[in-house]
Image 1 (spheres, rainbow, N blue to C red):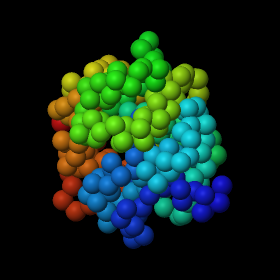
Image 2 (tube, rainbow, N blue to C red; image 1 turned 135 degrees about the vertical axis):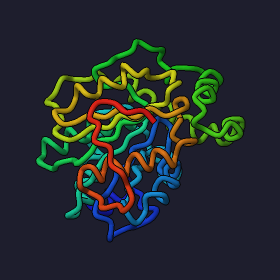
Image 3 (cartoon, rainbow, N blue to C red; image 1 turned 90 degrees about the vertical axis):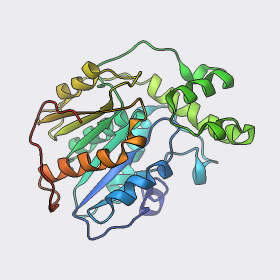
Length: 269
């Protein structure tokens, strides 16, 4: 993949060439890179954020969505590799993005490119499968109701028929990708893993979040925040601080005034 092609996949809202570390953020199902603009802004300077833009949305709206999560992970890995520099790149994924981040981390590790930290947000561990309804096959009305229940999309946008006609195909392709994904046992990651979750998330319970510890040979930490599946919107400041603390603990950041917790199993916020 050429650098120009890779550029379709990665958004630098706040270029920070002076930052010692990069953080690739992989969005949730139906999400776009711009959802994470505030996180990029809050981290800018200390961290350069690369927000992943999946096909089928915003400026990539004319591209068909990818309905195979493993293929999507391949393309993202290629994009990150094409854009690599001499700085380490940590990974942060929310919901579907957490599963993608895990698969990308595994691919990078297999290729000899170490991932310093993996952040998994709002998603159960890959080895914890739930038999759930196939949301991607829902009628438009039922799919919109599902999205409103999770509270990750502005309700006014979901009530606009013109907007729905543009966004529903990408949402369906994302849901199909994550709902048809099945974990295949693979070597454990060598990097630390931090799992972040809302305490009232209907899509993942604390036991399922703790199970991410089974996928790393390094340290594991669980951070629990008030809120549901999209807790990270209301808890943005706390989430950014948790990311900074974990990166500092991995000696990737020199952040004055940050007290680094060294808990390796569970801490709650």
